[in-house]
Image (cartoon, rainbow, N blue to C red; front, side):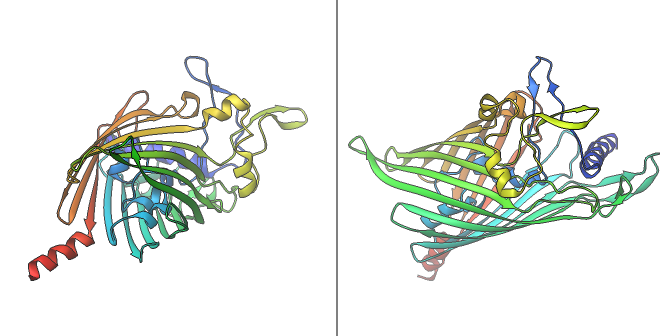
Length: 402
């Protein structure tokens, strides 16, 4: 019972701070070492959580990895190069297991190819925050509610040449955090938004040395380009996590049974960095950085030049994810990875390990996260993905018919 109270207090406190007040001014913050902290925050951050276990085992990277059923999250343009005709997967990630046992992230996605050059895909991402008890300012119980958020996606991917493809995705976002509860004297409502992804993918096969077949991949994905979200009629609208992800991958077929793939992702949020304000007798003024109350496109462009600390701080807003994947006979996989975020921008640093098994029409992936610095919501938990291969299913049926 104590753990439920803790998480209720934490989430409700966050909601009060998030939903009230049109003007929350940024002041310099410092950690115990004296470093200035300036973390970028957005609404609906669940959109950029790694939803599947394969990428989760490779440092939460996948913009240029070999295509799979979960490419819609990482780079939808990869679907045009996928070798299978149709497939889908189901993923499950427990969340905050050290506190409660009813917060989780679920992901369902599927794709279908048309000919050799085109593919469509769709997905549902659902984030449940468990059961929350709401109280008024004096602690009187108002009621129980189960906050949740979800996003529904659809995409179209097409090859433009033998080595290059592109894709466009559309997304509907629904975030219901309070169930209509009054916050700060104002009635709250679910936040809704629509967004789009634009992505490209390059894949080239060649020989490494004289004998080793290799595949080079390069991917770029700008995701969640969309309308801001508001949860009450009295608050300003907040940016959703528009994100730039790019990077290369290299797969090497060591022989007929063994292969290795290396990948490297770079990420940056394309939303304004909080400036530093100063208040005097004439009002409140920005003394470092730029005004964050701008439009969507302006905010994306401004995000490269608006850090209060200038260019050095801008460089700290890039996160990196590295990963490696080994397959034996296309039946068994071992994965590892590392994710790094600057200490002044969130300080997420962790290793990941994972494994994959494939048997006939089904594949099962696992991922495990090992944090290095701060507590991570996925620390010491397993993530799971079940993949269904329709091509293998059809082949199995034909064999049985014979």
